[in-house]
Length: 192
Image 1 (cartoon, rainbow, N blue to C red):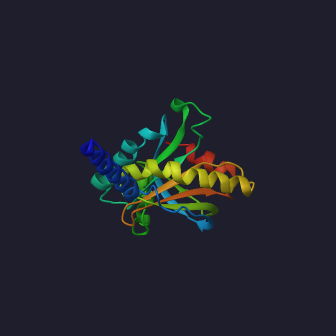
Image 2 (cartoon, rainbow, N blue to C red; image 1 turned 180 degrees about the horizontal axis):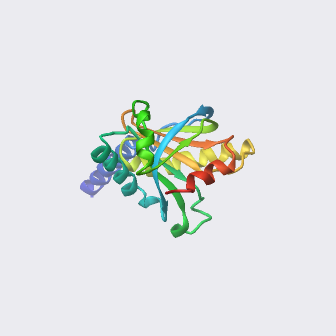
Image 3 (cartoon, helix red, strand yellow; image 1 turned 90 degrees about the vertical axis):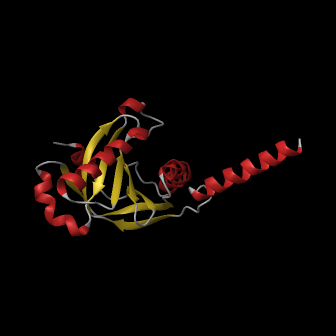
């Protein structure tokens, strides 16, 4: 019995350590900031949001191998609330954000990829530590309830949510524009 209790204790400590590492106990603060602009290289994806990772990875790989670019940030722009829309109908844009040093290559990229500007906007913003893919799932449960609460308190309309995965800085930034008109998001959905 003593060994079973000891094993349970060790498993509990390991579980708490893993959850702590991936951000379960990180503090989430929601603010408003002027964010952007961002040049996006992306593909449109329809389906369960949990399956967008390979699409983002493919775009990153193509930019690296075919274009000699290595963007430091990936992104997902999620249009639909998964609690209200069937998983197979969820719309998103997934890809990479061009780094400042690569902006001179936009014209050439536009011939081969969906490349559009996400304009600067006053946005509801939250940050969360990125320590690997589990951080994305932990962030969903930690960050979105805070953003939803903030949006309701400030009486903002629902908008697509952007998640920016900043690998060098080990951070996920969640962005909900409070000022971009609906037609901007619709125009991003118009792909090649």
